[in-house]
Image (cartoon, rainbow, N blue to C red):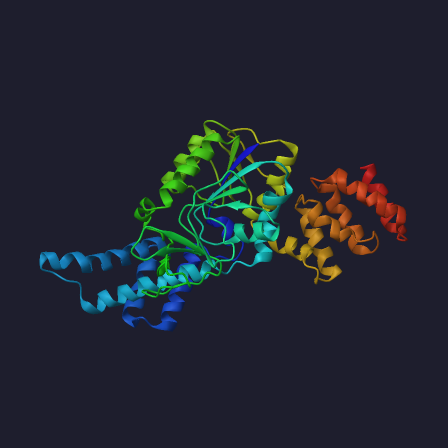
Length: 426
């Protein structure tokens, strides 16, 4: 099966990367602390209030001020020097802050979110396209030894790698607006990837110990700067996205509001041809969502960890034009990421894990063998008995029941064997 997944900001928000509006608030606090001009920062706060916290609009406004400083002199005018300097400094702060914020992702959370799709669901040909800058998918793939084809060559023994194009091996990862570990080689169209990335500020560049590479600046395509996607390697990434989506057997759009017209068009093209899911809390048809698509009312984490792997395992997709909610039907708007992370935490107390199990069971979350088997231990104690509730919901139920039967035959915990017998009776 060929599966195309488009991941928007909603998936990264659950990993701790702030949404644009929250990022705007944090940015203002940062600017006030670093003081790039008190009066200008005050005007930025007013502008953000006027636009409802729209950081993309703010970036566009600042770009216009900086651009005017270059254009107006040709017409006998100029921007006030203090305004021009404040805008320039603020633009540098924004570029640094966005990259800094997107590096918050921890490997543990990233692995929890993406491992079921990358590692657990079996034989699928997977393409993930994303406008997110963070490296959550790469971190998850690295942890589980999953090969990623992102267009860059292997590092080998070097600190850096250069663009070499996509291969047919592994999971295709299409980062449409760049990544926190991508850097532009100054004064060239070349983009490089670093093994150990770091945020850059303003005119600061990096230089690795390789004369042929040159100085490096950020390669992120920030909001309002889509023209940069006309430069390599972004046209090739875009071509790969359309090619793989058109060859896919099913498509999923998760963590995106579909406000972007290009993403809307891509979703509509997929929905007209193959089963297509639009995933997010409180979404409805008629809001830029293709009428042929099915809507899954779910947070990104619950969908990626539980719902999508179960659907792939069972080979069952919602009907076109439907709106479906998996789990208990109560429409939870909070993430399950914390609870699943707790189950996977070797240092968490058994009682804490039992509380997490109860929460996941109430929401009918379906986990796999990788998450549940360690909880069963040797088939004794409250944690093992409580874990049986997750066995009953699991997409790997048959495999886990075999494991439980072997444990019940050897355990001295009669309660575990009794609870297993009750589970098998239905």
